[in-house]
Picture 1 (cartoon, rainbow, N blue to C red):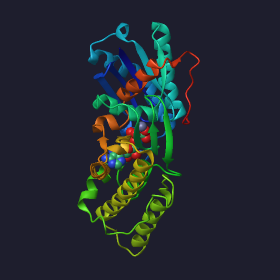
Picture 2: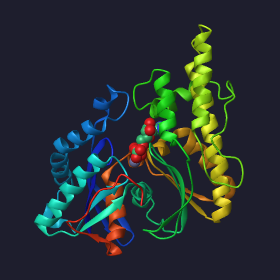
Picture 3: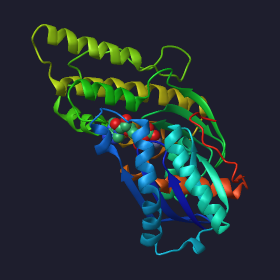
Picture 4: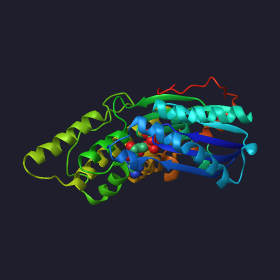
Length: 335
Ligand code: KG4
Ligand code: ZN
């Protein structure tokens, strides 16, 4: 079956064509139009600007995805669209576009949860991967553990109680002068600093929980930067970044270790935009190796927001007959 995926939950308009057959998964196209340059001027995503940019791009991007895949709408067996969670105005653009396309061409439509789609990216590259497994989603909006019990059923067993890991990277990146979003630039800069230079509080909550809290770490780092600046000293950006990254990686390793023990999972899937972080990838790779756990981490282009992952998740919703109709609405919230 050939699935057309459509994604517009935040600041990337994306359309993809993916062939999903028993055990065989092939990305025929995965077009992403990023709005980052536009939002950079404001230091973060401006929802109204994001919605307007999606409206301008969505039709062109969808037809480009079909052209690159060398298919037409007549070849599409199912349209999968991200319906939640995300920015409501941005989501509505993709949802309404997908509904019109599905209705006018009589193509089955399925609604996809963006977080589940991040996890489904792993099915595209690990063809033998199947549930059950443990998933860790680290993105701009989420830092959560899920027991994935089937292709469509997730049970959250831990999450952040405030900021997500991506927000935490972006906020400190901004304070040290990096353009939005600072996550990828901090990844590189961390190699140039001393990871033990600054002692920072762990975002791993103490006790019998798989939850995180990034707000204390963020405040402590801001306080350190401000107190150095008050002394007339600009602290080393590389040392801050290396220490900050090490603190986050250590916390993620600690909680992932606990989550693996609790769930008894033999496979870990890492997903979401922050899953591109090379320090997190290496830290979790070492952990999985030491525990004899298979570690599935999609390529960088499948970690950030893209519609191929939406198509993959949508395929399993289709198999479950979870069809949507023209009453489908978007929602800013998780399920
Ligand atoms: O999943 P995503 O593309 O969008 C959401 O669904 O939120 O994640 C975007 C986040 C941003 O916060 C960005 O700074 C972060 O992923 N990010 C990274 C890296 N690449 C992207 N954070 C740390 N290291 C990276 N290499
Ligand atoms: Zn995302």
